Image (tube, rainbow, N blue to C red; front, side):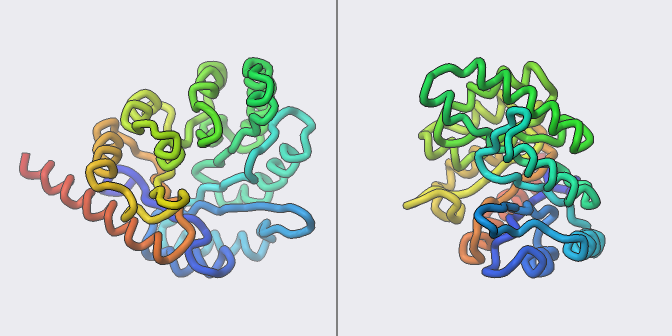
Length: 260
């Protein structure tokens, strides 16, 4: 844990380049890198042994941790192809000892039918299976998406000890106030995704009204959040201004704490 309480992270695609060049360039500026991994239609970016070895070396040089973002809309019902891919990614990245694995749960059928309980049951079984593979359920972080209410996932947290990845930008897209969500989910939050919303999401925090941004950072500080805060943006132009805004707030917050 850093002096600010949480580890500040980036994605692995801030620069227009592959994962390794991004990690090398971002290492001096972050505490964690979210490895955004995918494989589809014969194209993917899954790391081989040489890449993993170099990622380990970069982690040692820069005191980095890694979070691994599993492929989007994971169908975690036992036997699903996407669950098999998730297991493969876990095996490939195991030497990195990731701080967390981020999971987007596929809820398309539940959205169409309105039947959420069968979805929760199958998701729970799949997450239990994946949790054994990653070495602890707490390393799995289920993330809220803008397409459906995050409350539908909360019963899963009551059944199994998975963690939560709270995506603040997705809440803003739903026109929800993140502060009550932070206060409600703080005991289970291992990762937080923070990004601005303009004509689309995953933009610079410069797009966010300062009062709104500061309220989120204040809530994280007041709840003692000590996980990874990932600035989930995908360009140099979005990342560095966002980083500066967070560091400026944390410096002022620390100084105010020392004077009080």
